[in-house]
Amino acid sequence: MKVLLLNGSPHEKGNTYLSLEEIAKTLKDDGIDSEIFYIGKDPIASCMGCGACSKLQRCVFDKDKVNEFVNKMAEADALIVGSPVHYAGATGAITAFLGRAFFSGWRSGKNVFRLKPAAAVAVARRAGTSSTLDQLNKYFGISQMPVISGRYWNDVHGQTQGEVNQDFEGLQNLRFLARNMAYFLKCKEAGKNADILPPKEEDVTYTNFVRN
Image 1: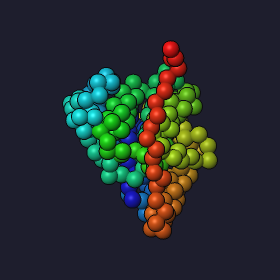
Image 2 (image 1 turned 60 degrees about the vertical axis):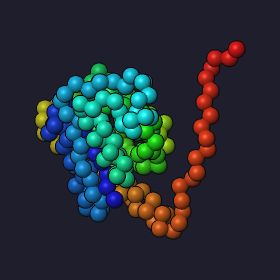
Image 3 (image 1 turned 90 degrees about the vertical axis):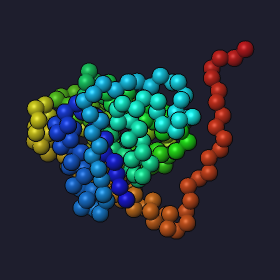
C-alpha cells in the first residue's frame, strides 16, 4: 500500500516538505509506503474546462507535472496534500494543479481518486490554516474520497525553514493522522480480502437551479 504526499509549496524542502516527511516516517513505521511528489516552481495553468481530457485521457496541458501526478495517483492507495498558507488560503499553484488533476482524473475515465482516503495539511506562520484546510478538503469531498483526520486540525506552524520542527503539538498531530491513515488503509485491504466490494455507482444525474 502506498500514500502519495503532494508538496504544494514553492519551496521544495521547506516546512511543508518537513511536515509531509514526518507523516512519511510514521507511515513507514506502520508498514505503509509513501512518496513525496513536488509540484515544482514553474507556472501552472488553471483548468480551462475545455473537456479535451475526456478524449485525450489526460490534461491537454503537458508542460507541468499534472499528468504525471494523475498517473501516479492511479497506482496509489491514498493522498495527502500539503500547502503553505497564502492570504488565508492554499497557494495559487496548488489550487491550479488540483483543479486540473481532479478534473482530468475524473473526465479521463481513469477514476483515480474514488474511495481512496485523503487528507490535507496546512502550514502557516500564524493564521489562515482552518480556511486553507476547508478549501483543500473540498477536492476530496466532491470525489468520493474518505477524509482522514488526526486528533486536531492538520496544521503546523513555522516561518523560516525548519521552524516547523519546533511545533511539537502540530507534528504530533501529523503522526496521529498518519497512523489513522495506515489503519484505514489496512481496514480497506481487509475488507477487500473478505470480498467486500466497493458500492456500484449510479448513473449521475445533473441538474441546475435554472428552470424554464
